[in-house]
Image 1: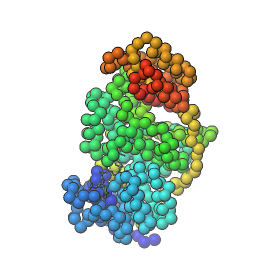
Image 2: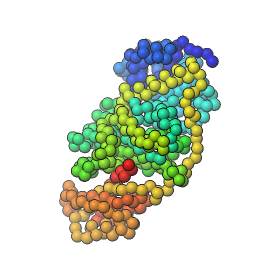
Image 3: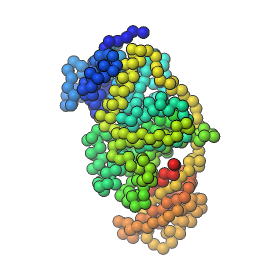
Image 4: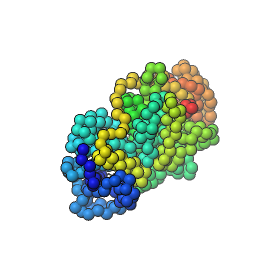
Length: 434
Ligand code: NAP
Ligand code: HSE
């Protein structure tokens, strides 16, 4: 094994995250180099637009518009893929892995879609693929699951995994601010994805949940097999009901594994969490993850989940691992073993639910709704009627006793078809896990 006095790093993508990595390696260079025992050379970077103004300055000779040239450059030891998306990013990552390099990625969409292919390529060509920044920004949750909690099996993992959604929900709740205005702020702060629908429709959380499920259970759960809902239907009416009744609304990823059957289920849903829970108080861009292991019990992790600096922190920690691997050889990390786990059927996913319906304000409506829920075996725990902004209509908020996903989804479908129900019913979950 050859050791390298200088390690050459290529940064593919010099946007929010890429510039953060560049900036913090430059500013913490002395400490990093002394800890790692090598010189870190930020050798090259790629962008789409050479003329775009950037906060970090680098010699023109180091910049290219061709990230594949960096991935294929024999002088580069570590390639950081910070472009995003799943097409060019996949090409760049595979090219670097095929050249035996280590790739550091923040790209959860890529990992979720092509994880097995990337791990295979890394194994086959003797390189490595690191992805600490792909889940929960600056929180070292990948390391926690892969290394610190290796003794455990995980029956429940749940968490706030999207900084943009948490920022939006927090600001809507605190200030009654409007959704589009806060989303625009989250974009300006560098929290949101280039395609913001990935954030607000729940897909970014689903990608991250898929990665956590793989680390915890060795099985890839594709997003098509999950229940995925975003936050766009959450209104001030929901937030004020939650506040007045001792809850906060958070977009949660929930990963469960049944101890007996081994069945795994992953869902992403806006959820009312009792305000006594730690995660109910994780606000703004912060993420929070609760991991319950059979040996350790519950552990909780909190930190900034998006933005330049926390994400750069995670990328640089992977770069440090890559440098150590390069110079001291072999991975100190447990293998990422793939197994197959069956998915739980919908009727075994149980819990309490919150339903908000816009209804015609006339006699018999409540009876019709109660008749339908009874028929579908969904038991109502509480009913609240509030005035609606629509003349002649009322807003009904129902909460249920324990039910299951199959029954509640059938209920929502059937309620939506009643002529006295106006528009689509809004369904949120009520957290019942301890
Ligand atoms: P970004 O600000 O949009 O940066 C993307 C970079 O890639 C830019 O430098 C862009 O060039 C370059 N690029 C995009 N398309 C290209 C193309 N076709 N050819 C060449 N270069 C191209 O994105 P980001 O927020 O840094 O996110 C990067 C990755 O990190 C994504 O996978 C994202 O999901 C992930 N991530 C982001 C955060 C966050 O908080 N932002 C946190 C965790 C993970 P130009 O600058 O010239 O446009
Ligand atoms: N758009 C993502 C978020 C970036 O808001 O959480 C961090 O992965």
